[in-house]
Image 1 (tube, rainbow, N blue to C red):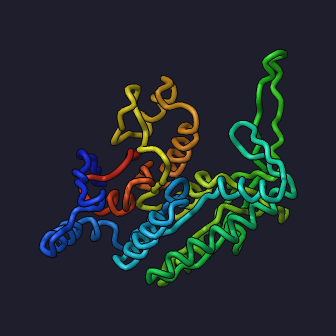
Image 2 (cartoon, rainbow, N blue to C red; image 1 turned 90 degrees about the vertical axis):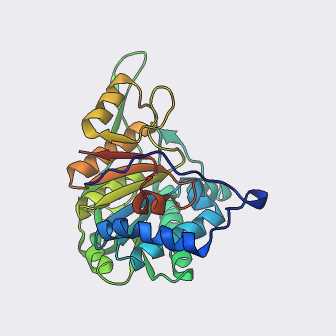
Image 3 (cartoon, rainbow, N blue to C red; image 1 turned 135 degrees about the horizontal axis):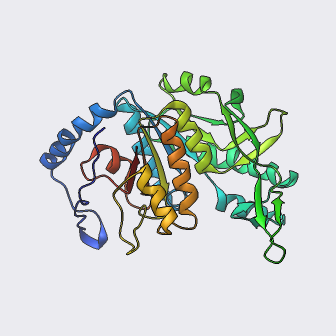
Length: 313
């Protein structure tokens, strides 16, 4: 596995902040230089977790759709898994349904999980499908409930009472974590001319609906598919060191060490744990990258510069 981590390319601007004009010869050269990377990922599965700022920005959403179609046209098998936390929060507010967070996770009662499924598997999923189809792709919307793709179990969290030091269980309601992944339906879609777009909603063995964290859900999908790459588009450049500089490459052991030392903290810890899990399941490499930069997926896969932090064995 080749690891691409040289410094990023210069990004000059043209009039009024627009991209500089590129001559036809330069465009041809850029395409020719991308050939080795296209060959590397041809017929390989790439799982992309899509969310954050990039999903809420119309221009960047259009760019993302074009990039996914380009991957498919280049012989790659892209699988898109999306989040939607801000959109869920906005809908709950519109419906005057109060939502509380515990340990960074949304407490999801019966009324809330119905809204979660409506927003994720309905509105957001179909927006992404429509965007991909509008630029020439053939996307199909799915959720973890389709063909029992993802069977979830109730997520259990514990917290220690600061006064008594007694550990208590936090009930998050209908919040789950992947227990089993059945890749059959994804294999059928991937090996056609269709692009799967998957919402992180799953079912339990008993048929209950569970809201699953999108990063965790995507990591389970990537692991089950033994993807060549698992890309997490986030709102940060990647993993930062103690001086807040980007770390371009990490092994699993180095990532664990940074967590233990306190360099990796907060919301980045569960992302790293998801990355490690995916790698343990057979994913060749995981990249945490900034979804706010133009064309982050193409920058990572089809250029020597890469983007974000690559984590591998």
